[in-house]
Structures are given as structure tokens and as C-alpha cells.
Image (cartoon, rainbow, N blue to C red; front, side, top):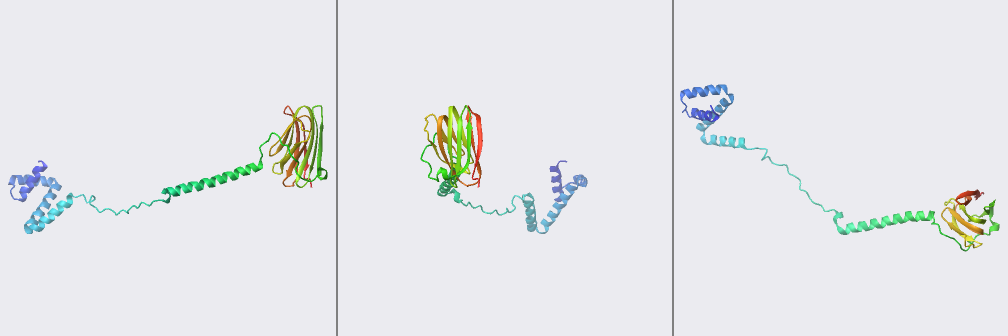
Length: 260
């Protein structure tokens, strides 16, 4: 029997309209199907209630039917969500953004300038030639003698007389060469700083240049140079005197200043 026919026979049985043979067939079906037997019992209870208190029975039946068909989770009260408030940040204000960027730019520029200034104070760019009036210091004869370096060969002749005071290191170089030679005075830029270079002989074929830690003379012929360095910390330090021809060293020696 189909489910529809079973339900019809169960209704007819409750109403007392089911013939005896069909009633026995229904009882056999119900005995074999517990769920059908349970459904019949529930309908019998509803019928009894309807006969005793029709109004109450209808209300109970309608309530149960409605509740059984409603998805209670769908209509469950939802948790109250906190209202989201939009708070405008001060960064969204154009005037504040532009002001902040301007101040940041000024600060960054100051930092960069400070570092660049520090680097410039340590190293000077080489100049093609340095000539000028001698720095006003103690006379050369009154300074302490560091050493007198001498070199004599067919290629070049040189005398390097180094003297110093508490403020000035003065180096007098006599350099003679028939062919071009290059002479350098090398030192620690933390200890000395070039103040002045003067070519006494004023030979147009000879030039002198200075950087933060050396003085270079490109010599042809006979020349006399007076080189003055600022004595920064008065601590013992060596000055290297070198002569090159065709970039090959032909002489090298050192002299110590601030011995005491």
C-alpha cells in the first residue's frame, strides 16, 4: 500500500468508516511498521482531545503543527552587534598632512646637510694649484727641526726640510729634475690640514695641488716650495716624502713631527 492510502485508511479507521477486512489489513501493516503505529496513536489522542475540549484541542494541534514546520533557528533572536562608529583620523585632514610632510622634509634636509658638512670638513677637493701669502706664524728659523731629507741622483735632486711649532708645520722643498717627476707629501688628515702652498721659483711648467691628506708637486726644472700645514692635535705623527718618475717610485722616506 502507498503512504497516501495508509493515511486515508488511518483517518477512516479513526472515524469508524473502515470496513473490517481493510481494518485487519491496516492492523497488520501497523504491526509491521512501528512509525505508523505511533502516528496512529498520536492522532487518536488528538481525536480524544477534540471530543473533550474541541477549542483547546484545536489550539494545541495548530500550535504543534505550526511549531513543527517552523525552522526555529531562522527566527532565533540574533545577537546585538555593536554599532560601528567611523572616527576620522587626524591624518585625513589635508592641512595636517601637508604640514607634517613639510616639517619632515626640513628635518631630513638638516640631517643630510649635517652629514655632508662633516664630510667636507674632513676632505678638501684637490685644486690645480695653490699659491698665496704665507700663513702668519713663527719664523722658520725659530721652529723645531723635525728632519732634513735629501735625495741626489741623475734623475732628480731633492731637499725636504721639515720644521714645526705648536700651531704650524712648515716644509721647504727644493726639487730639481730635467724630466718630469712627481713628488708627494702624505699625512693623516686628522692631524694636519693644508694651509698654504707657495712656489718660490714660479716655474710655469711646475704645478702643485693639495687634498685632505696629501700635497702633490708635478715638477720640471729647478723649483723651491714652501708648504704650511695646520698642526691640529700636536701629537707625534709621520709625514711621508715620495718621488716618482713615470709613476715608478725612485725615493721614499718619512719624518716625524711633534716629537716631544
